Image (cartoon, rainbow, N blue to C red; front, side, top):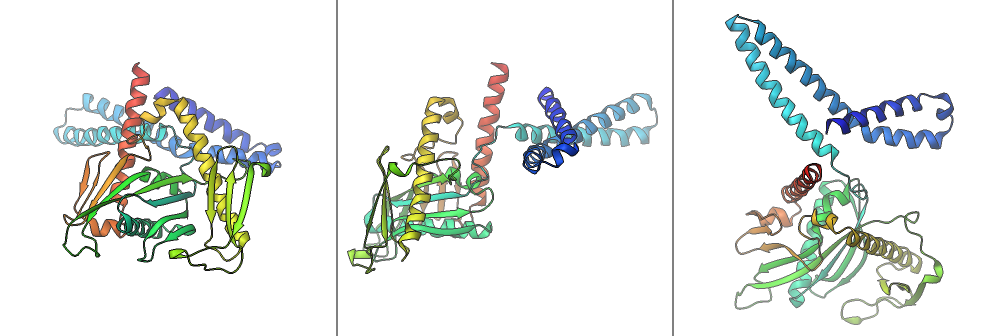
Length: 360
């Protein structure tokens, strides 16, 4: 680990030198690239220098302890050594986490797709509950939510809702939400008071920029039609709804929420680009199966990841065995405890893998 940190510090110093070169400074594009690389290394280099300083202070305190015979001074040094050892251990843990490979998508905006699964109208209402939960969470993070496409039911649920969450680090926080979510509750429509079990599927896709994923116009088949509301009634007198088919993969995306055909087309393209990007990433990950192993669970869309049990007031995340008895705050968007626990579990897996590679 220390060798790696040493080489990162050398790279950081090298970037410092390059950035102070007047020739580089006059080339804004080159300077920008160096500045980004420099900023990415700054936190870890500052932490490494603090680690070395604490190491030096510890060595010097131990030297003084060996040389002193004054009881008061000895007691003071022992307390200082204990404190420094604790600090050193904490810094080592922090450095290990900073050295973990970063997911290149972590800082991206995301497209979240929620679909009602088994359970009919109750599943559609649960899809609505999940949408509200993520919207509230996004609001607390000061992120922006934009509905791209929705298929509402008459009772206020959703057969499907697709929305974009824009904000720094959105993917890093929401990526572990992909999978099957299960709810156990007494539906308002149930006269006998029996508990029903329903499901909804959540997919979290990093937003793909046009520069990352170029789609040839001849790969697309675009149809326009009149949009319809719940129950099939026409809600628009113009052909503003858009259906885009990506011919090479057969992926189909429809958008009809906006009154303008142009806006629907724009939103449909965002969804299509994210799905294609996700498809390409899945293929790449299949080729390196060990990368899959390091995820919390397998990340498969068909995997049941969480249960929301309303009568018992509990939420259980099955991947990490976490059960919290505070269902109301959670479905109201208080997801911090669950998300932090999932991130920590993922980091533990990554650290284990790093240790295996180092000792293997």
